[in-house]
Image (cartoon, rainbow, N blue to C red; front, side, top):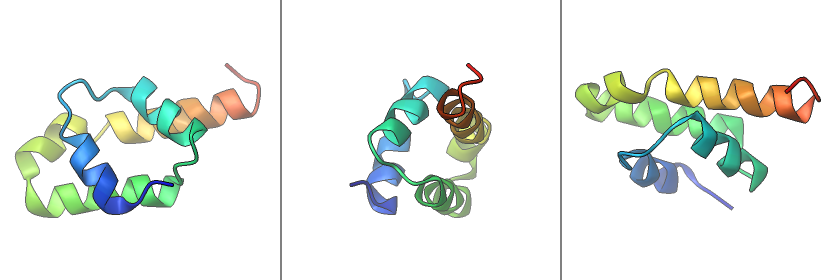
Length: 71
């Protein structure tokens, strides 16, 4: 299972995209933990946050669409 600290480290990956978030959620990542990690990054590294602030919500949205059969 993932935790917020793991996500914070993982979000530093330059290849992070919405598909990565979908895979994390398929593997059991919780939406709240992903959003908490994004908030930690926002507080500590605004430059990095600006790069990924849309990626995480987009990935969560894509996962929800897939889970509901809308993809």
